[in-house]
Amino acid sequence: MRDNVESAFVDINVLVYAAYQDSPHHGASRALIEEAQRGELQRCLAPQVLMEFYAVVTNPRRVSQPRPPQEAVGAMNAEVESPGFLLFPVPADLIAQGIGLIQRSPVAGAAVYARQLAATMLGHGVRRIYTSNTWDFQQIPEIEALTP
Image 1 (cartoon, helix red, strand yellow):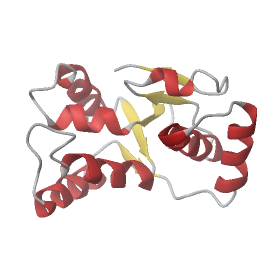
Image 2: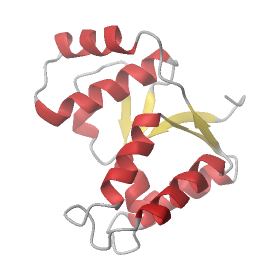
Image 3: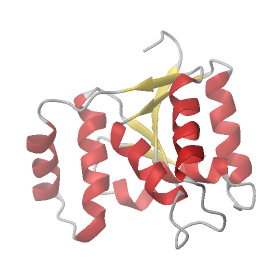
Image 4: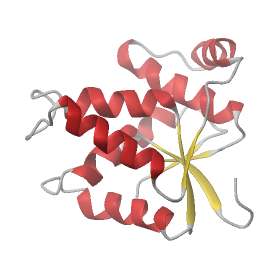
């Protein structure tokens, strides 16, 4: 991570909104991505977020204009290669950390993925995430969840 530059995880929804101009959140999400490209923010991602991005943008039930697999992979590669980007590996203690978070503040269903992402963040010492789903992180006091 770079000195004197804020480091923050970016959630799947921010990446999707930035990719779709018809989203009402496109402008704010795109501005956050551009902030990182200018070196004003260190964008941190987990492999989980990139895979979720692919799952969403190729799914006609989730987006207005699904992308073909090759285009989605191209967008993922562009994300990884862009300035201001840092891909964190899965921490060795991800399962233990994730189970601990679930035990502390139980969730059901797909909400478990936010716990997994929080475990990855905590494993790498990053405490801030930009997301449209701030409520997913409200029960985790170590995490500051902000909307772009």
